[in-house]
Image (cartoon, rainbow, N blue to C red; front, side, top):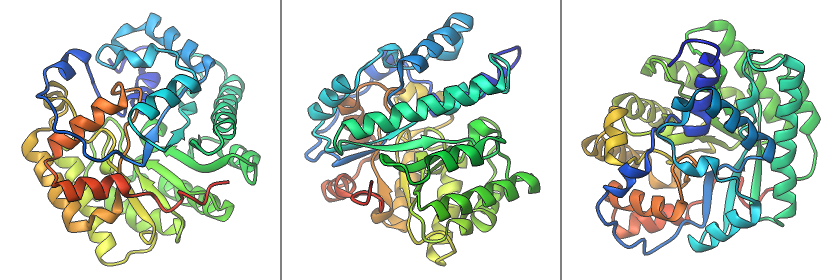
Length: 353
């Protein structure tokens, strides 16, 4: 599926789905979840697209339906902020970190010219910020920037200091970042330093669709993360992109070692666990299983639950309340551990503009 005109977009689609091949039929096969007992105060990883993004997704679906074959149909639901707020109310979620998916428009000129892509990214970020402002604190807006794109500095400069923006999302997988490239590492570190100077927290999706060796995670920790200083940094999907396969566990372990030695950039480092838990069929497709989830939880306990926050990655997985129940069931946490996770908030919460 990585050939033809949509090859670049298929890589970007990882950002929409977090590499989750989630089928509603697979969700239906899951055992009845345990009662939640507690609900997350904040959903730290949540998406809501503009009408333009919804139209773009439909366009891609018409060109190649296989891109969305196993995703939740929520991707095509065209929700409004009001319908999303009702869903959050049902799940008893007080706030949601609304992360822009503007990078989906950046296809390297394959579906539109670079100037159009820049405009579409800007407009998607503008939609996210406006939605957050209109929500009176219910949504916390993170704009989306590709740090390897030549327009990255201009996009950051445009948003710096504007009301309604609370952070910056970097989807390194969709950007095609490889820690084995010294040039890319230097470019990314420089941009992270610029974001720190702007005083904007970071949410980073580190893993792409290819190989994800622990050595590359360690390179990121050693050569990029120090540029963040004491800036709040949220690593998406527990250090992976979906599931708890060995590469994800190795990634989390590398971060845990860095935290233990108080490495630069780890002072305010947290991990959202959106997408770590998957329905059984999907987990199998991604090389993840319940035994590996137990290893992931063991790493969480080793690092300390203070470093972990809950996220749903909606709409890729479907309605958030059932997803929380699935997470509660599959992680096999104690009631106290689940309550702790639900109460945890990233360092930037309460300090938004």
